[in-house]
Length: 66
Image (cartoon, rainbow, N blue to C red):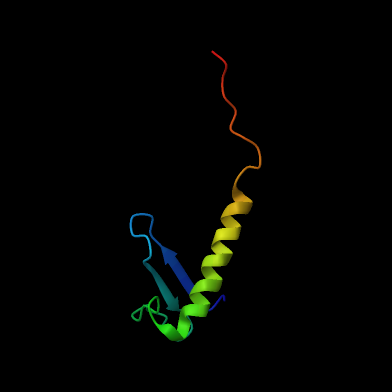
């Protein structure tokens, strides 16, 4: 997957950028909606999701008692 670059946007759910960095180094061809790359997109989004879960705290946020 290191040959691809994935970008998602908080304000545009369901949209993103997927580029093949090896064959398209200048990122002219967005593969996000290309059916041939839907598995790549899914794998990368799944990896991003799990990395995000790992970065979150397992404990609730501390609250000051005032």
